[in-house]
Length: 73
Picture 1 (cartoon, one colour):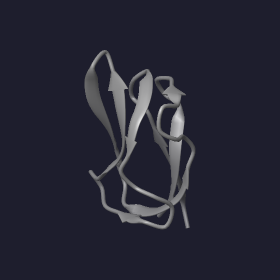
Picture 2 (cartoon, helix red, strand yellow):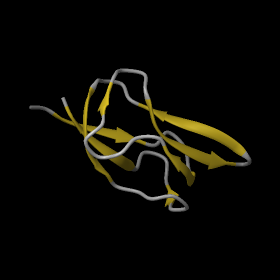
Picture 3 (cartoon, one colour):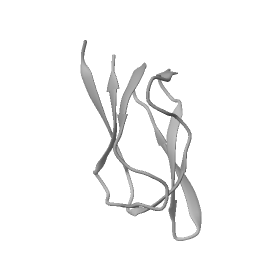
């Protein structure tokens, strides 16, 4: 199975986790919501698969391009 890295597209703070380890996700699903400058920005999957790891938790700071989750697809 392929390992798929899901990255944040913006610097901010993890506001909400929408998925958990073991969840099956489809292309376009929201895994995490990041708050940046009072806006909620979804981290969306580009490929479907199973959530293998969530590398952040709520209130964690994240940087643009940071890997926030790993999928198996």
